[in-house]
Image (tube, rainbow over all chains, first blue to last red; front, side, top):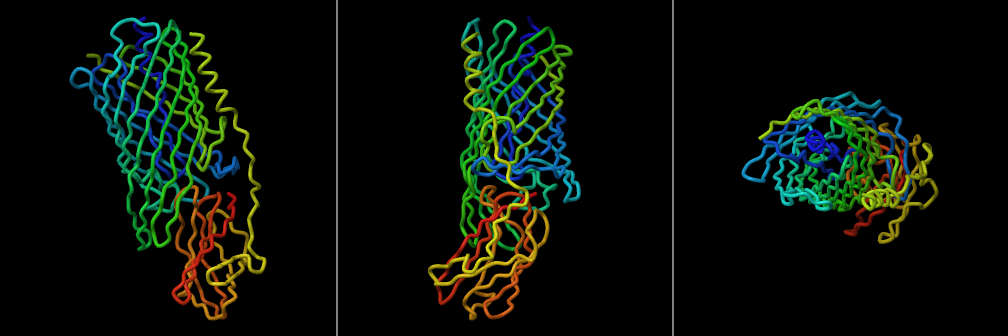
Length: 295
Length: 138
């Protein structure tokens, strides 16, 4: 039973929602969901850009070997009775047929979370819930600063998001629901001597997942929807972008080596569901290792 | 348990399977017909002629012909813009060939998708613009 509960640590998939190059993408924080003091997660992922979704359900196939390999580190620590603080950063290696390959530093995130809905007694229906605030820091290079595609690994904006993560287990099944609402803030860039101010707006992510547990193993699946509202651009000519949305479907496998160590394998695909709009669609696989220190 | 499973699958059903219409890789909207670019406030029109089909991440050139021989490069601005992604591309170079004819060089689309070529003309203190949409294949 203890192993099963511990496996719930990993049921929130490690997904980073991002368009091919642009927009105010956001990533869910790697939260401590159970009775641990510290948590460190190292993820190695590989994503391939499969298509560009335009408006009106038109897609363009991408066969230009546009791929990203990224290494992400998430750390979180508990302080006080039910608060936690975390940070994450990532690097990437990007390739395509047209540009020289490039190593990049991605955006970084800080989060503050609160165990708002603790599971103090057994309930058939009441979930365990954590609310959080997350700040995206644009340490990566964005499309507004660089035209070489393989050097882009940042959204370009500070973003502040508020979210909720709910988990519930029942016998050998578990379920999770995550949602966030985030706002990205305007920033002025210099392009070839010309000043351009980009004003992003609101965005949101909703994820629903389920898993089946067998001993130290878990298999799961999830569906996620991401939305970014249009951006307003002010330069010598003012204009607006269009809103972006995408749907991600994923399969997750978890293996808990011990109460302190676990591996997660996550396959994700954005070309299978819904009508994505104005964004790049990727297929990818991520292997994560998580180490936890109990209280 | 059953209700949760139902909820999960309902969510899946609502989003539905993707059924995209793949865009022809060679589809490009041309503006070669006479007066395809209209600047109503200035009572001007123009046409474009590509030196070669514009492609993703390839420099190309087009000729812009306006029906006002008095216009110079100083009166004209040309931007590349991708409205869906909220960004542009590197600046183009405008070469004035005289008699309202311009070579627009260094036209470079940094990614495939739906792009706009934004023309802005100022004459006698009046500014008018025209956004020409085209599809850039990979």
